[in-house]
Length: 341
Image 1 (spheres, rainbow, N blue to C red):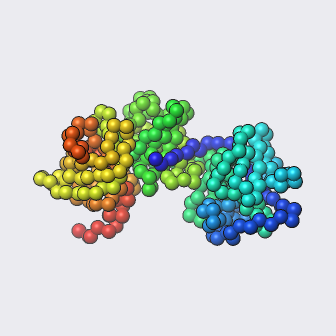
Image 2: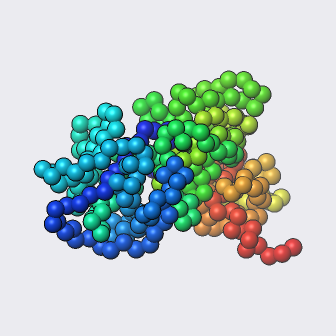
Image 3: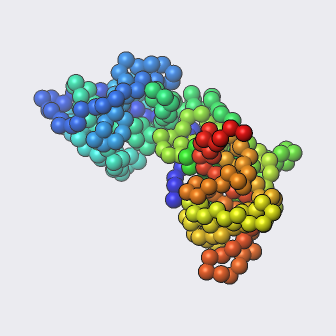
């Protein structure tokens, strides 16, 4: 299962650290990104820690830019950060961080370079709850107030829906180029004609317009919070089923139709991991890039696809039915590689 994240958050930050005579053994950083906090460039860059497979940011510069107090605790040899009731620390070489009266592991430890302590970006995201975004050669950190001022609009297909303990997350436009959106009580949901809606109205395969926060989590796909969702259209099938996976076979049928075989994972409890579907002239096929309309002739084996179909299926070893909608990942590559007409 792929995952998601929310965006509007409070920010704790980080610190510069000098360990009395201590020398930490760590892999030298490789690669740098410009580091911005609230759109102001910091003197120190974000550095790539190849050994831990993450980016590190300088604690004190980030913390003080966000209004945090930074202090060195000689008893535990760790840098402490504090702002109001928010408190934590980072200790070089130790993947163990105080968080809500507990300790949390982030899969990466702070490092000491040139008498400065650097923390993994996961510390900023998961402990300090600060939105982080990488774009090109820049790593950007924003305060909650800054993040709430900026929004982005996107359109596309709901390719997956996840529900857990009353919380909903929707995947817009697939994994490769899409975005994972947290739908909260604050998310406004309306239909195309302006009628109010709820999370119950959100369904697989729907076409939607979304307004979401501009700051996103460093994950694949990126994660953020949805501010507003406009339902443009839905599939005709009630209780639609879905499968995500590899397009194993594409076989021609009569009158320009094709039959496809998809092997992958179920998108709903009653869906199937392996399915054969007839693609007709009524099947809508779109890409995850720009919602570009495709034809059945553009479907090729080994493509990654989301397929949506009716529960009315054969009871054969591999269930068979009719595809109502297909969402193709990476379809723009086909357009670039296609021969000129």
